[in-house]
Image (cartoon, rainbow, N blue to C red; front, side, top):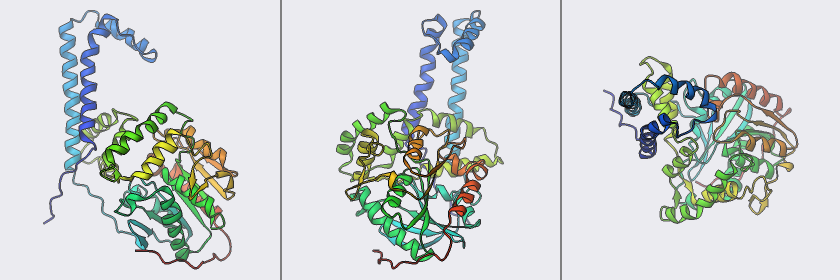
Length: 419
């Protein structure tokens, strides 16, 4: 008999998402008399539809309108809560054959997805779990690449342990990431291509800039660079929050997952309301329900950040825009994309709400020989949506194979990894 799975804890942080939904519902009550009286003006894009609505409601009694709004709000609240409950009890659990672990140091591992093709070192973000690139059997960019001429070697950062909680970005890049490159080269030869996703693109860029002779090509997917190119006020606010957040979390020794989730939720406070309401309406046999749960499980399976890393990201990157201003240093040396002469690819999702397209495009401008793609997908959709294989996976595979070095790869002596 199968062991019953415990209910999920998400969506995280649940109190925040419930409060946002309640506030949205309550605002409808509060705005109703103001809109009906004309005191509250319609937004420009809603003005025409609002005028038509006002005319159609002119003959409706105030009490009847209030009752209709109340019924609609109850229906929407019920769907939202039903969607959350359904998600928490949904039977799907991620179950894939684990790739071979080639190397490990502390919480960091190097996973080999096999394949006999061109080696590719894959660097994910430190903020989320690496398996977004290996989400499901049918939605795994890494397994697809391994079956199509590429040998992906994934850096899995894991959750910070006692040692990693003290890590800076220098520790991760000049320490763990360069050691992972050594292990990857010992297994697959070098030079090799390096690919970074989201914040992992910043780490991959710094690695390539420090080790240019060992990196044959650099692919950067949805990687932020100019943090003030769009939504500069929001970036400044994040930087200004860090002193208070440091004081609050210094006892924990890390920036906790739910605090990170709150920052993401601030980008679109009502996203959870919309998506769980939609999920509640999926049929039992609808494949979209299983895909929704798989992705939501990953979103809620985040990892905390080491406090020094959180401070560098929020204060230096967001607050001071140190990356684009040429002030970001790793091991005391400025990270300068202009020194990355290898062939480069910058993928800028046009519908990215996490990394504004202007921020990512700035990196393409800063690299000497970068090719830029702009798929009409979002930050996560570019790797797991139904359109991703056609719009991103296949072109990426073609690009990687074109950049693969000719001849026999060099296999350098490697330093012994700590365990």
